[in-house]
Every structure is written in C-alpha cells, then in structure tokens.
Length: 381
Image 1 (cartoon, helix red, strand yellow):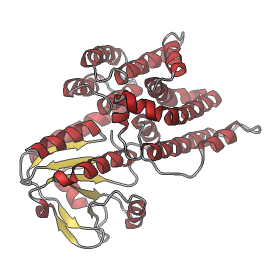
Image 2: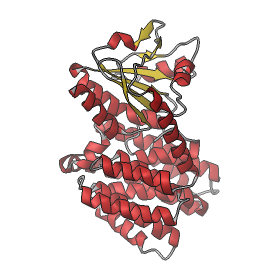
Image 3: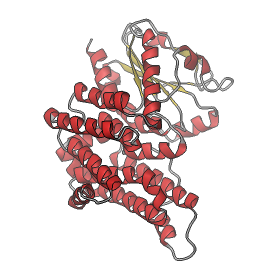
Image 4: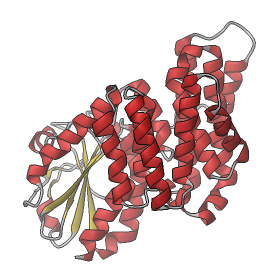
C-alpha cells in the first residue's frame, strides 16, 4: 500500500491494521462522547475529522500493545491471537462504533466508511469475536445490494485471515473475489481488501500474486488506477535490477554516506517520509527485521523525502529503535537526486542490495511478507 490522498489515505490506513500513525492526542472515548453529545448536529467535516483522529489514536494504541510485533504474525498464530485479542478487540470495536455513528449522522459517508468498518469486523472475527462474525454474516443477507456485497467481501477477508495460511481455502477466496471484481470493477473497497490480504496471511507467493492480478486485470476505479501506475513504476524500475546500485548522499548530521561502505552486507534502502501513513505502518516491521537480522548481515539505510529537517528529527527522536543512518540533506531536502535516478513516485519504496552491492529486489508499498522473504533469501546466500 502506498501513500494516497487524505480521505483514501485514511481508509487505507485503517485497512493496514498495524499502522503506526501520528498520535493526535485525543482519546477515542472523548471523541465519541463529543460526537454523541446533545446539541446541534456537527458538520460533515467535523464528523470526518473526528473519525480520522479516532483512527489515528486507536492505531497508535495498537502499536504500543504490539510493541513491534507484526500484525501478520499475530493474525497467523493462534497463540498470539489469544494473547492479544483481549486488548485489541476493544480498540477495533471502538472504531466500528465511530464509523457506525458517523454513517448514522451522514448516510452519504457509507460509501467511504462501510469498507473500513467491515474490515474491522473481519479482524475482530479473526480474533474470535463471535458478535463480529455474526454481524458480517447478517450483512451478507442484507436486502440492500451495497451492504450485502460489502458483507460478502469482508466475510471472504475473514475466511482468508482465519485460514491459517491454507492455500486451498485462499484459492477459493481468490476465485470468488475475481468474480466480484469482474461484476463490480469500480468497487474501491475491493482494491484495499486485495492489498490487505496480500500483506497479511498469504499462504504462498502464488495466491498473493493472484490477488495483485485481480487489481491489475479487472478493477478500474481511481484506487485501482493508482495501484496500476505504481506497478508500472516498479516495472520501469526493473531496469536497475541485477545491476550494481549505489545510494549516496548526505546524512541528517551533515556527514557524507554511501552504501559502498556496506559491501559484504545485505542492505535495505528504505525510501520513506514521516507524513506517509503506509511508511509509518512499515516501520515496526523494519525495526523487527533489523533487530533480529542485523547480526546476520542485514543493514538498513533510510532515505527520507521529507521537506522539513525539523519534522524528521522530531520523528526520529521519538523512534529510538530506528538506529540506522538516514540520508537527508538539510540544504536540499527531499532527496530529489535519488528519486529521479530510481524513478520513485510513491512511498514507501524499498530496495534490497545483496552482499556485492547488486540490486536484487524492489518492493513498492507496505508488503511485510514480501520484504521479509526477500531479505531472508539474500542473507542465505
């Protein structure tokens, strides 16, 4: 998943589940109480702002609970689901209530919030919440076509996530989602759903690739077009693959740096920005990989495309586990030379160099399973 516009970005953030988003500082309970308080009906803009701030707050709370654990690993493990469910289900539930309340006040928000709400229901069902599963099943039977379709889609997400990486089950899910995509090519929720299941719980690369192919072949809405553009960018970047690659510039402290100094190591070059929700979502996973695999030869180099050194420094000051070097020239913010050289038009984008400095993999968007598999392949050589 990549950075998008504000409204779509917020919903994309919701579907990432483990998003390490900006802590706004407003407790969800307070926002809900304010929204439900007697008095004049709040404006549509205010309702949207409340929902967005609630989402950011809850996802920050999730990050603290998980303490760097991967949401994918949690969802795939019965023992981890049992461990975290009592803490996470109430947080997901609070967001369901926020979305329900917002849509109750302004029914026109259903087109934007129904998918995010139902995604949370699918996650809670995967964590064993029977009420959420029953609600998804009831939605499938709704007399309203939009609600019934959404219920069916997110029940399929639940089926995928709860399959414990069963390839046969997931293949059936792919078949059904393909039929839905053909019948509803402009369904924006389908784009987010497919990207989510690619990132969380795919049994193997084959089913993950098939989920991607549905977006590329059958979907036609704005989200799908953006995904297709990002995929085309990745294909174009392929001309750099299997060739020597050097990422160099100035570090945040003003010192020169080049990945040439890291030959003999596997190097992940993480192009990101503090303002990008999917980038922030990926950080705990990168931190986990670095902590587990650094001694085995993995190094990470950040390339910040922020425009403000102050924002970057503030973010890093609150991220003590991001101990790797950060390329950022205070006199030329944005790392434009690297962006131009490697055709970067979306973040996060992660480049993986082998021990000889050869670029072997490029991962665009938040794809923790893909990046983990690629890193381990290079370390094994």
